[in-house]
Image (cartoon, rainbow, N blue to C red; front, side, top):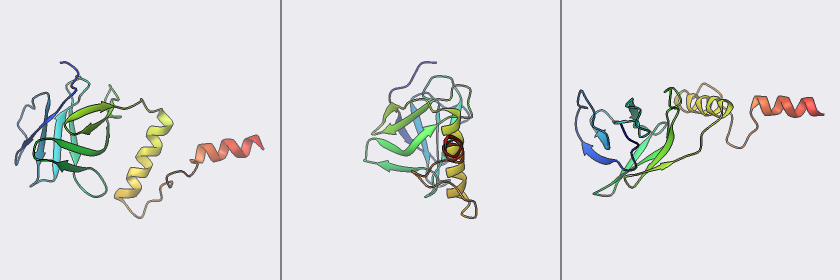
Length: 133
């Protein structure tokens, strides 16, 4: 497979058994999007649509997906944005950044879980600061 630099939307109720490269499948009924990883590894990527997860914007021709797609559970660990049908690659996150992102996401999905606020030092950074003094 090859790296994708664009995705075109296909609105469908359910996803096909085999997804095509370069297609962002959108199921409004199931509030879910799906596509093959844009790095070309062939893994399916599912993005649930909800206020605490992803949202889509459709301009009549192209789709944007927010926030970014971080495939940190996949071997490729690709990270990209889908904006106006174009794939915009993001920098690679460190293991610490991935863990912080996951903790924040868990906090958004489960309000009973405390997650670090954006801009607040993580536990590791607080620990390192305390050790320096």
